[in-house]
Length: 78
Image 1: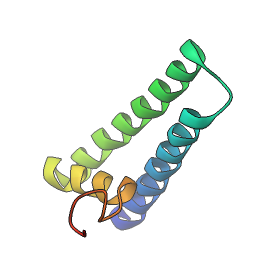
Image 2: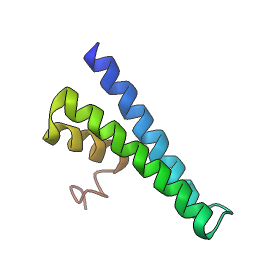
Image 3: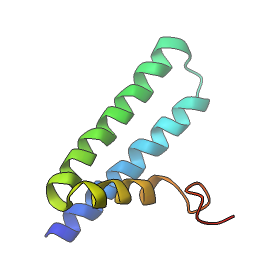
Image 4: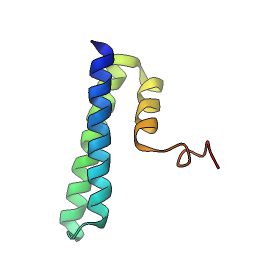
């Protein structure tokens, strides 16, 4: 069950991150845009806490990094 739960959390993180990214280029501006992106990042924080409980802090942040950033973004591929 843990692997399925981790995969579900990973999918939610990806969805929240993509929504926040799209919010940066959307039609909303100012406070509305900020509130939207803040809500998405807060949700990612909640998912991080769940992963920490399941796997510990190092694995949790590794999963988040590998979910939202490509190897190029992480500086592992040039």
